[in-house]
Structure formats: structure tokens, C-alpha cells
Length: 205
Image (cartoon, rainbow, N blue to C red):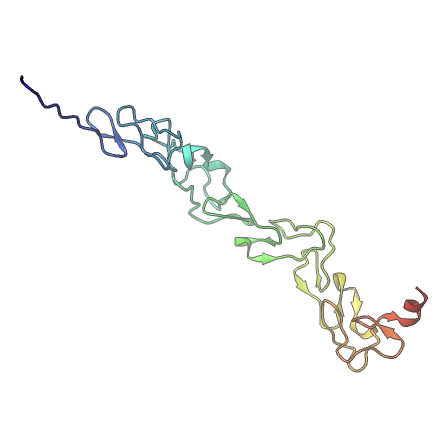
């Protein structure tokens, strides 16, 4: 009885085709060594189609080429971009961040590189301009962006209270910009951190 030996060659991971000379770029799995199809159908950034064998067309990028270069918020040219990450060569426009500049500044931040903070009361400022919609700031802050500390002689919401109008023991001209607290306590007949509440009113309540 004669036996013959048959050698079967299988393409290595990431290649497919008759001569194993085609490359697939699947995300997280290995393509079929004959057809090149990726089991999950998801390509690495910069590649598309079911075999993940074709580079993104100019003007698109990312996983399965689903993102468009023109949808980014880059400084300078927005029409073409890196096929993989869509990186903005000149950085992001004001109010945006991320490699491809598609993320708006996080709540409470605004401006170039989202490097500025705003302190609006109960709302979020505009991520580009920093303006608080109602123009009402948290105690201790002022201006339409609520990013400027009260002057040393004022405190409270929109810096509307005067340090000198408190009923403190000792120094009254300068106070904590948020609470207006009296470090030495209140004069007789007054209460509260900033000593502006009459004890007579408190007792009546």
C-alpha cells in the first residue's frame, strides 16, 4: 500500500489569498486566510471594507473610515487628514480638544485648549466664549464668564456684597471673596458667617 504526503500551507495571521500576499487589518481578531474577511467586521483605524484591506479615501479616517475630515474643528485646513487618527496638524479651534478636535471642552472649561475655567451658578458656560447664559456666578466670582475673583472689598454672588457693610468685630474692609466670613466674629446683635443677619429677626422667626 502506497501513502502520499500532502502539505497544506495556511497563510500567517493578518494575510490572505492564494499567495498570502494580501494584508487585512482587522481590529482585535484575525481575518479568514482565504477570503480575508474579518469576523467582527471592524477594521483598525485607517482601513475599511469587510476585508479591512483598503485604506480610507481622502477626506475620511478612523475605524472603518466612519469619520470625515471636514467634521473636525481644526485650525487651518480641514479638508484632508491623517487616515488613522484624523490628527489636526495646527491644533484645535477655540473650545475644542482631542487628537481630531471633535470633543467640546468639558463642562466648566472653555477657550483655547480648554485651559480656562468658568464658575457659573447652576449652569455650564459656553465652551467657546466662556459666557454663562444667565450671567449669574457662584459666590466669589464675577464678569459674564464668571472667571474673575471678587475684589478684596466685595464678596458673594456676582460680588454684590460689600465687605465694609458687615457687622464684624475688628477688620471689615477686606473679607473672604466667597463667604465674606468675619474672622473675629460678629458684633453684638448680629449672626451668620458674614454677620449681616440680625439676631432679632432670627428670634422672631
